[in-house]
Image (cartoon, rainbow, N blue to C red; front, side):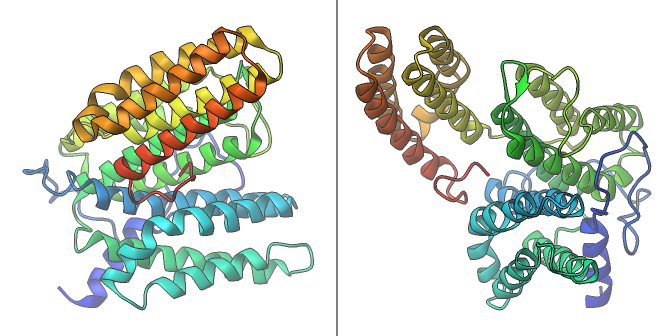
Length: 382
């Protein structure tokens, strides 16, 4: 196969049409450059070897999440929300997600890192009211192009492996659920930035699914393809826009269940192994424990107790078995630190003491995340 043909295939996979400011209820598919992998030649994967490579999936997912942040950034810039647009570019896209792909890209091609970093930097610097629309659009498209190239490089010749792409979509969807959990509190959107992350990730995940997975499903899973499309459309159209919220905000548990439904369908049609969710569980656990301490310091003792219970049931309990297999000392450290926080809150200890124990727990969770998710930048939610 010629290099030119490989390039077209790779671009077809990742040419996500990220120009719309708001999601729509339309089922219209973004038009990829070149042709997607042939559905006629598709067959269920005969091996899960490739999709079992968790690090490759995480690296590819980081590129797709970069596209999600880019979509959010460009959409917010169009709305003249320049500071918000810059946050999704410099802080999220460059400072956090570049960490996950810098080394693997360098290992593939030493000259691949600087173009990505430079294009993102140039785009971020142009996000202000004094720069022309044509310049921002040019910089935006330049980032899209280099992200396509980076994704193709990390594919390592697996552009036709739709199961691998499905695993990447599933990973990004999982991250969207984590972002939504940070965005919504007690039936209200309390963090607009995380709301924007959620929508950006959903859009990027759906477009990768549309260009790289869906064309291969007509011969292997027609009925489930219809269910996938319906659920994707329903979830994305739930978001009025990046800056508007629905009249009734979906509870975090319900949103997570909707994401789980999508993930399960993807797992079935692509014959994927079970997802590795320990990093997300640990992050959610840390988030709930942090909220417990904050609510306690604010004098909301009952709410602090509720967050502790949620941290225990939805976090520590679910992580305990898998983390014990990986590193028992890390688990024991987290359990000790959590017990300190729990006892301090229950005994109505001084706020400074609760904050001290909460900091110790946060550090313990961070140490565990560095082990179970090494491609993630320390302190990053992505």
